[in-house]
Amino acid sequence: MKNILKYFTVMLLIVAAVGCSKEDDTVEDSGKKELFIKPDKTKVAIGELVAFTAMDETNNKVDDANFYLNGAKISKDFKFDKKGVYNVVARKLGYKASAPVSIFVSDGGEVIANKLKLTVDKNTVYLGESVKFTVTADGKEVEGAKIQYIEGGTLESSTLVMDKFGTYRFVATKEGYSNSEILEVKVLLKPSVTDQTFTINGVKYDIKNVELTIDVDKNTKKPILYKEGKEAYYVYKLFADNVEGTFAMYIMKVVVPNDTDKVILPYEVPANKVEILGGLGVIDREIEAEILSMDIEKAYAKWLSPLTSLSKGKGEVEYEFISVDYALEVKYKGVYNGLGIVNVNPGDTSKSLKIERRNTGFSFEELKKEIKNR
Image (cartoon, rainbow, N blue to C red; front, side, top):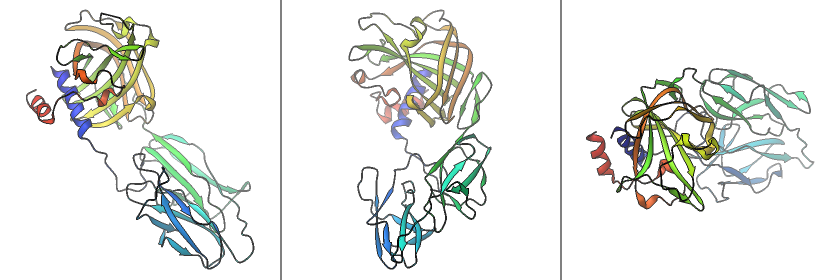
């Protein structure tokens, strides 16, 4: 069946997919590991060495990290020859740039440095909107301070047009001052407004067909009643199709009595018995958005009319799905088909809920044959 092949395609792509990295240091880098600087001391005299070590989020040493002072690379053991406050950053491929660490260099007396404060007029904006930064110390605006991307690069002015979606981190620095705390600005894609579309990473697609499916045992073809502890549930998916291989998938579980012996559909239980698990956005059989439950901004389904039958039936539904970063949106009101099936390896039925990652039991070669012969 068409919907089964779509599901197999998604399973293959998720198993095989690897994360893509971007060369632009200023783009959102949430997939990278955290990096931290650990200096052996932060207060030194002129001419004294400071030894820098890079650590990961589990406090393990990260070898081959590079250290930078005012954008210039320095050695991991560095001698400061002038009085002042210096901000050092660590970088390594595959990691986020670290937050700056301040080193206070004195000539025998104590170095007292005012701490910068970086603020922005809007912490969350839509793509194409601008933000304005302000740098202060002790309540007074500081002129000549640099506003830098943590990942690298310095702003040319205090106003910035956010032309790429994602999360950006900034810090304010100035010689003689302690650097500011890190400030984050989140850039969202503007939501679509029509009711028959899905949007993946800002690109909108018309919905040509919607199908409701249920997970079944691939051997017996019977619906699977998943059980975790005392909870039992069926798993349903709504596929919103554009063209073959390009679709959005809305995944939900329907909690039912533990001893039920019949299929119970999403519209046959109270709304609080339906839990949204996540969603997928697929373009030309490539996964472009994978949304887990904690990344959902808004999701609901209103079943306007039930299926006319469980075999090639039709019903009406209104549903919406929006991820927190707007990487995936679905807005639909109209007819849906059902009830389709998604084959699942029965050996996986007792595992925890990672529906989009469940092993179907098919080898890569078998999946390729299914897709080729669709």
